[in-house]
Amino acid sequence: MLTIGMVGGNQRVLAHHSFAMFDTAKRVTLAGTVTAFEWTNPHAYIELDVPGEGGRVKHWSVELGSTSILMQGGWKFNDLKNGDKVSVILSPLRSGEAGGLLVQITLPDGRVLGNGPGPAGARP
Amino acid sequence: MNRSVLLAVSFCGAFLPCVAQTQSPAAPPDLSGVWAPYRGGRGADPALAPPPASPIVLTPAYADAYRARRAAEDEAAKRGEPLGTAAVLCTPYGMPRMMSVALYPVEILQRPGQITVITEAFSEVRRIYMNQPQLPIGEVPPGYYGHSVGRWDGNTLVVDTIAIKESVLSYQNLPHSDRMRITERIRLVTNDFLHDQITIEDPVVLEKPVVYTLAYRRMPNYKMVEFVCENNREYIDEKGAVRMRVREK
Image (cartoon, rainbow over the protein chains, first blue to last red):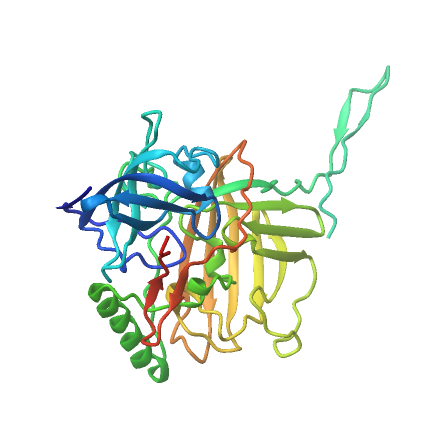
């Protein structure tokens, strides 16, 4: 499942590189299964298998903030495990590859987390 | 300089009033603790937020190249292909940029002879040796943190830093020469807010000193988070642009 929408506003740069490689004016919504959750620096990552048309699975790499920034935003290192079904909103890579920057995730228990401090999804 | 507080000695007796003889060069404030950048902005107390920075004026030999680099950075970012920097490769920031990285706190450990600053981003460490003369530029091997000496000027910690490697970009990604000197005036504005006024002098690159202030707020119970750059999926491509590696599965 994949939806692309446009939203306004700029996001602040909060890590060790510019986020201009992500199209932060776009939103892609994915529903999929977690194949890896890497609680690492300089960024944490979620690897996601997303079922598409005809039962074909597309794999996505989702970049998060650093572990410190995520903890300031309410994340814990064990909030995700392999096999979890999640819904993810991301800003996609401009290159067209299957990757993006997390905006917001809905965990299996219904909790909604963003990509750092502030309201869910307010900024990376 | 001995900054320890001399205890008051009281002479009290049956025939004498109590007289406190106090010789107390006041102990310096204790800056120890964890401090998070405080950038001000909407709703911020102007007395606590950092004052505006001075303009950056480069010498003619450096001005055009700096302006061109900034323009190229802006243009590349608009194109969605941001130019890579050393930080993309997980190289530490060094002085002075390490003192304020995004939302990451810094921890100050204060002892009479040495004040140590540990940053959360990249776990950088700088050591400020107290009450020692500065070494001559040219006698210290250039590095990311250089050589820092400090002294107390009343309640303000004054730190002098030299010997920053020329490949380590300065404030606002400014270039610098081996003559760069960084002077910091660090003080508690209130018990919970700290200001670090930074002056960068460089007779080769800067027409006049650059002065800016970093503000911090105290994080009373915060435990510094480790930061080991073990999973860096960003890289710089052949055009100098930052890219992210995606996985096939």
